[in-house]
Amino acid sequence: MPSLRSAAPILEGDPTIRVQALWEQLHPDHWPLSIQELPAGTALVGGAVRDGLLGRLQKQPDLDFIVPSKALELTRSLAKTLGGTCVVLDAERDMARLVIKGWTIDIATQEGSTLEEDLWRRDFRLNAIALTLEATPQLVDPTGGLSDLEQKKLVAVREQNLLDDPLRLLRGLRLIAELQLSLGKQTLAWINCHHRLLPQAAPERIQAELQRIVTAPWADDVLPLLLRTGLLDLWQNTIEKISRPAPCLKVAKSLKPAEQAVALPLARLTHLLSNEGLSALRFSRRQCQRCQLLRYWEERNDGMAFASLSELDRLQLHLDLEKDLPALILQLPQISQMQWLERWRNADDPLFHPSPPVDGYALQKTLKLPKGQALGELLRHLCKEKAFGRVQNRKQAFKAATYWWEQKQTLL
Image 1: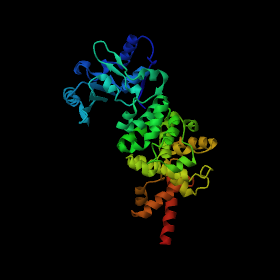
Image 2: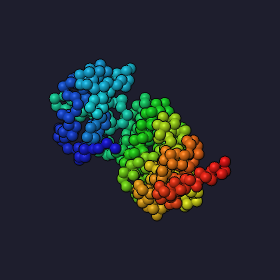
Image 3: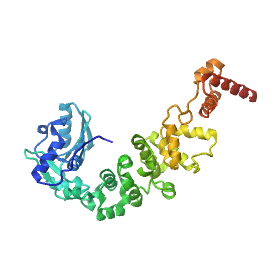
Image 4: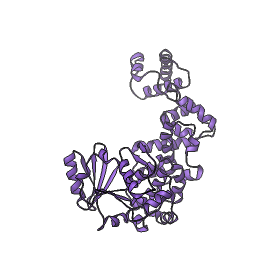
């Protein structure tokens, strides 16, 4: 999660002082471009303004600017002048992105004849606040976003704005998960009414929103709502929905923060989406594999901390989930959680971090073994022997390997 410049919210008091405080939080002198390089009539909008007012601005925030015209031309010129990269976001709507020195700066041509008209076309009122970059900056808030920020409430600007880009239906829940907001009744009704439109958005965009939801601080408040609205109906893991509750911070209290940061998002994604859904939403091959393996072992949970598994199956569990084991541990009873975590945190535990006691090259050289399937089987056998304490050093490993190979040759 991006680091924040924690500060008190600046939502009340004299408007002039509020704008000055916001300006100081934004630190425009730290931006990789100068305000003088932007045309007259430029305004800063979106997340940077919202988060600055809430006192939770990132140390290097993404910046979104509205310019009166020729945004793509301006972005290309800035990229050339400043040594950045111009990425065309939407040529038809004249939107581009400047990537420079680790910063992401979006520049778009104003929609409509005025700044206010542009703001009325945005998704949610708390995102429809602009800060002008004139000599005396001003906050422009035609829809009531400042009031929503004070009340910690999410309200859509208009129903049609959600229909114009159905991804906004999901983005609203992501904002709730990140900012701990309440959802306006009318906005919830619109999400419920139009949830079937979400598949019109690009899969990659949906995936990006879900990735942020499952890692957000208040994801636990949003996951049940996400399922109730039907937004994920096309990709949902219906078996998980019926059989068990969503993984939450409460059941992860045995995990350290760094462990939670890895385990909870993985467990939540596995809970939310089917294997087919993960693939359809273009999650990476690695992420799909992680969720599939976790789901497989979740389904094999015997309610006894996997005590009924054979040695080979127990070894396979730890081979499959070595780095992601805390996501499975969330399902165990509290006493088993602590026992498993203690062993998993020990990098030398031979079962929880399985590895062969000798490598294949050493076996080939010492025992004159050929390459092939048999060598792989032997390495797996030695890994199991080490995992369950029957092989504890190289001498014992070679002795066990010799015996195994002789038995193999006898059978052949």
